Image: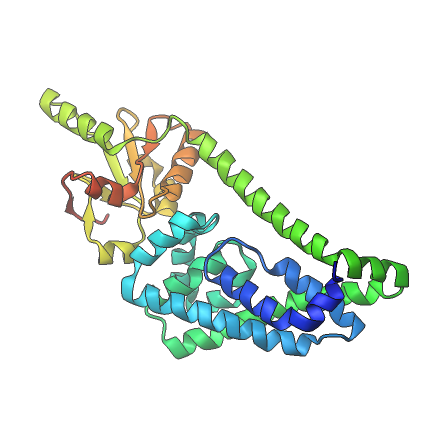
Length: 318
């Protein structure tokens, strides 16, 4: 088996380019362990951090520009795709919308350090119409900070390891296994974290047909209908200005601040844009902890409701 030093010497730049491109393209395969390994091996002067940085920046530029353009032209539909396939993106969409709205392109300076935020920041930047040149400047600055931090952290570790030739030799021979083991551990951690979250939702989700039955039963009996809340960001509402019948558009943070508007004598139904309904699920769990028990997220969100063929209303903002 080739040592990691030999592998990185001959294939490092193509390997790191492809790995970063795949990660920034949306697949949950972290490239941080590889960047640390590259930095560590640069201590042997067989490869150079100064060459690795532009390769990483180019990979980030290609992936992030593609997401930016997709977000600019297709808006929330692109975020729906990310929510379906990413282990982190769905939990960060609402938060990133708010962060980008408040801080603009400055968000891109630290986005890559935050799991999930790294993936959705570029399409949201396109969705909010940040100028492309401004996007590139901030995105490249953020990518440089991100790549430099991990590469030089690896170099620092490599300089320490070189003080023991035996330890450095062990890193050379078993480095590939260490990198792969670290990546596998991170992926498994994210999967376990996601599965635990989904386990919390068992029995909590409400199916579209169940909600429709609740609405029609309440109307026929002359009772109040379920209190339905649209948690989508205003940008998503602009691109799809429809809501469930009688729903009010209230953001997650605003909802917690205005708890007094939430009735306690009827069912509360929450929905968001993402088909995995993670935003509404998280808010539902938070409201449960606040003592509001009759609250449930709608499976599939707005798109699931529309796909089921049920009626919608024009959006109402309060």
